[in-house]
Image 1 (tube, protein in one colour):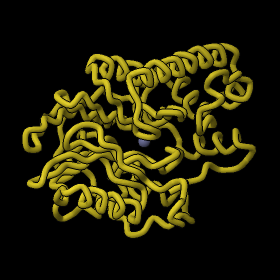
Image 2 (image 1 turned 90 degrees about the vertical axis):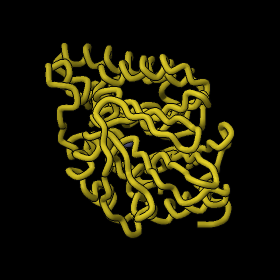
Image 3 (image 1 turned 30 degrees about the vertical axis):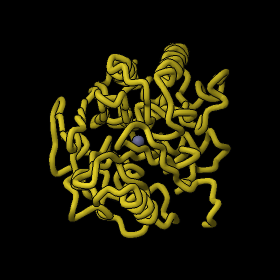
Image 4 (image 1 turned 135 degrees about the horizontal axis):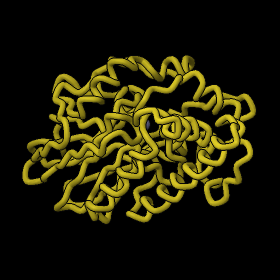
Length: 306
Ligand SMILES: [Zn+2]
């Protein structure tokens, strides 16, 4: 990787003491993180998909005059957000939703199964050791950090990180800015509800799980997509078409420009499950979901860009 690699992370100052760590272009395995604090203590929101990238994040925190984080909040269990947790132990306590812990333990080295040739470095599966059920408030110095669980949405263990005094929200993968939402491990209906919760926070600065720092207009774009998927699924389901057939016939319109649009078929699998009356977050077969996404890409599996 050269000094000018287009996937090199960069840091954005969001408010006094609060920063986003952005990994362009936000594609598969290129998630965002965040950090906040002062010379006495610091908190991290998410880590990264590889040990190397997590070490870049650790260096970025220290370069901003902060100590090694004493708390890592995991917005959900996916490996791009949690594989780097080990880089922050033993100093950090990992905090997340109770379902995040359960899913992370169940998923294990999930990214190694999807991308066996990617060099992830040393990765220990380190789930939250402090869990909560509905909400939890932390203080880092005088910064209030509110953790909110929206119910099943991107996964069944999502956490929204809201800083009310700074007007900043870290959405985790409830929002992909410039990318396609990804619902197979969560809920379409729940994702719509989560957007309502995000709107109600009224935070002007929005750090999505992937993609550039944005504002609440990202909620509107995400909602348009989710409503479109719901309609497409209802039509396809009524016709007896499979999710793959429905995805192949779809006119993507404004969503054609979004990254990873092969996720449409994965999202249709989730929408079909809800039309069949299965509960939100009901497990889908990942081999079918990722197989259909590869089929959407002309037989080429999705690639990890970390
Ligand atoms: Zn995710």
